[in-house]
Image (cartoon, rainbow, N blue to C red; front, side):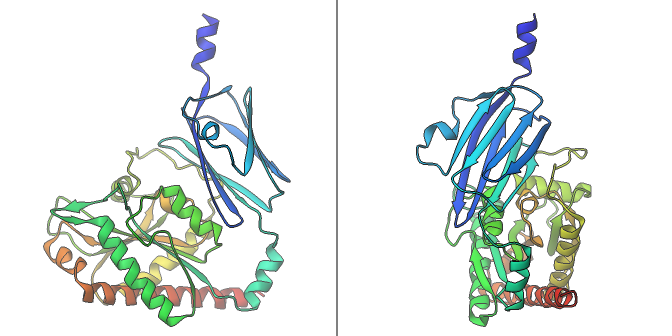
Length: 341
């Protein structure tokens, strides 16, 4: 009897994956069920102490890869990651479906004073553009039109404008038809210490008359509608009372993301109706440390929006307006920061 109860309380480590970009590593640890744990980080080791004992699943990533930039120890209810060198920052957050613990580790030697000094030297702010979906994930489809193709074409148009202006450093999460996990997209943004993260998507509804732009920022509080849109983009079913556990979440980030959304709304309303600006539990936004928004460029289910979405002239106009909003926000941010230096 007691042995049965014991095994029922085991936490199985279903999968561990990671990606490394420059001085940044993002770990994704998928476990069989929600579990409380304590997180600590010191020098070159990250430690998690769970309430329940841990076991490794058969498909564990760490067993398949020989050359990995860390050593993992699982013993009892402890999981420890030991890296090859000391890190400067280690942070984590949790996504609920499937239950994943995301750990970001940075090996940059600069501290906060160095970052401020770098800003004073007028380094070019960094913009990360994310074309939603891709590869095996087509996103929303209507006839032969696929969301992944539309978002990539908009990103390329916007990227051309930003590069020609030359005021900002630009990074794309994808520049071709490629599949990326949601945590990889935000991980890329964090790895380059970006200043703005924009994820582009296309919406769909069973109401063919609904059209226009929608802009979202990450929030734990959200409407029923925002929840439905987030479910579509997250690819998972959520309940209204589910909370995206977010250790790194801050009111500062949410407020600045909302301001970024407001600047974009002011620009985009010149070329179309902006139906809403509100918070939603988007996974791709949850993992970023910078101001970040997700823009629904239109409804593929609406004839007029669909016609515009595949129009090169419309893409160019919208891209110009999005860039105007980004520039206005960054200018606002820099003036705000300089007032406190």
